[in-house]
Image 1 (cartoon, helix red, strand yellow):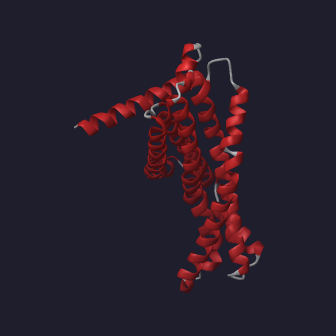
Image 2: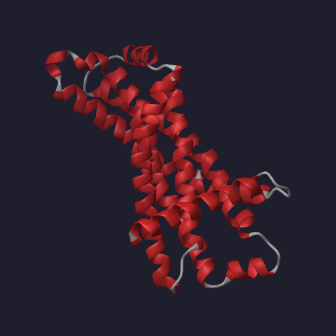
Image 3: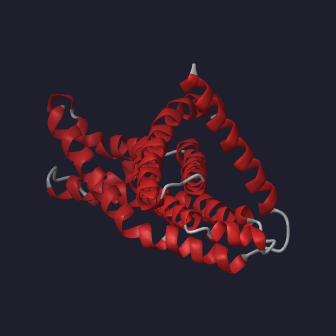
Length: 251
């Protein structure tokens, strides 16, 4: 029962932090410089790892699909298989897991260090709202940049499949691209990008929550960072199932 009570308290605190963050988000003054700085930190600096993940995922998916089911003529529909899989599932989920682990841990480490060194208490003593100053820029940047990284990753994943289709399966680029364009629909794009907004929220709010709750010096910050990576990854995977069902119903 104690674990259930602790879990319920954590959910309540997360909900309260979410409410405070969204209220502060629309309340002036707006910290545009902080938003841009966080967007650069979260989005631009994560572009490399997101690109590598997407390209090689598309290449492996194309190779495994074509070589595992040769008798079914799957290689002629490799564009459909790669594009559908990347855009609807693998692109949003893998980008959230890889990029989310990086940015979530960074948020927790930054806020946790400020918490244990009493910098957050100093902000409160000066009349500054820590949620507006620290949490809101990270939340906004995540909600903007993770869908953008997902979109770029989707394109690069399909491009990785093209490389394998041309070099290993001896298909023409035009054949592959036409197959992709025929297969992808607006519903597929909306489903994948829609998921990334939810993933961005989970990653940012969990990272900030654990950072603000950190205690016990450097060891406590380390534990909070580990908790963030684990909790955010679990939330991405669990929510993906329910979001997939939801988007199939709505779209």
